[in-house]
Image (cartoon, rainbow, N blue to C red):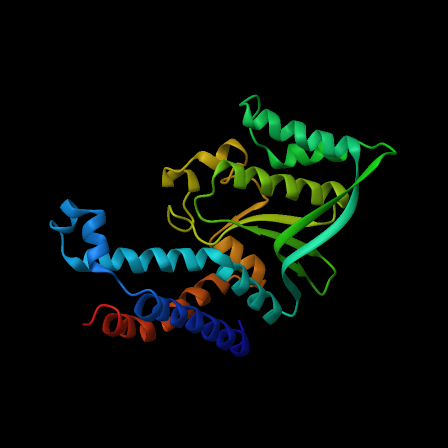
Length: 262
């Protein structure tokens, strides 16, 4: 990442953290009595800091899940020289046989009548053609158009997506391919809960595997694979972690002082 992109990401993260601190310290301060009323036994067993920390952690995780990663993805893509748009909608036509095939594939996966195989599914869909078309619209969390003209469509999900989220994302991804095989749709998870580079399944969370093979499907990008793809550089993920740490070094003492009173 160039210096301008790094500065933009640091500024964005700092603003996000400032909003969280303001909310937890000023707008919705910690209510000790409310915690005691809600959990009178647990409240008496562990230090108050545990409850305060849990409250802050929930705000932090929720905020990160509300578009922060896709916004950072846009900044990184722009810094690489590409065009990038968050919440990008595209409307196009797809022949009805392909749309019916997509619905059939997803239905069989839900019913455990087949196992996910992205490449095979795409080939089966593209083999179908007829003269009847239907208009569909797909909304992507992040759209990237490279200088080469390549179009990438990203669906960002939490690191433990539920079945419905996974199915909706895969339907959109398959529709994008059905409308134009040159498009590159991706299912993106910002990090791997099993540790970067490890099989996702080893995290113990297997729900999405009913719809997508998170360890083998080429359309799935997790952690370093996601960020390095967006940045077009094998160092993007490492550099991004360093930027998060940089912001954290500034915000940690502020959180300790303003929120925990340390």
